[in-house]
Length: 138
Image 1 (cartoon, rainbow, N blue to C red):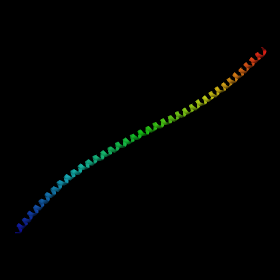
Image 2 (cartoon, rainbow, N blue to C red; image 1 turned 180 degrees about the vertical axis):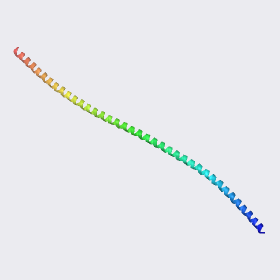
Image 3 (tube, rainbow, N blue to C red; image 1 turned 90 degrees about the vertical axis):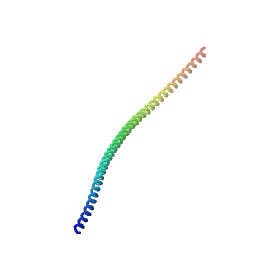
C-alpha cells in the first residue's frame, strides 16, 4: 500500500513537474518572444533617434543657411543705404552749388542791366543835350 501510495504520489509529482516544465517552457517561449520584441523596439528606437538627430541637424543647417542669407541681405541693404545717403548728400551739395552759381549769375546780370540802363540814360541825356545845343545854335 505504501508502495502504491508512493507510486501514486510519484505519478502526481511527475504530473505536477510535467505541468511546471510545460509552464516553464511556455514562459521561456514568451520570454524569447518578448526579448525579440524588445530588440525590435530597441532597433526602432535607435532608428528613430538617428532620424531625429538627422532632422535636427538638417533643420540647424537650414537655420544657419537662412541666417547667413539674412545677414548677407542686411549687409547689402546697409551698403545700398550708405551709397544712397552719400549720393543724396552729393546731390544736395550739387544743388546748393548750382543755386549759389545761379544767384551769383542773376546778381551779375542785374548789376549789368542796371549799369546798362544807367549808361543808356546817360546817353539819352547826352543826346538830349546835343539836340538842345544844336537847336540853340541853329
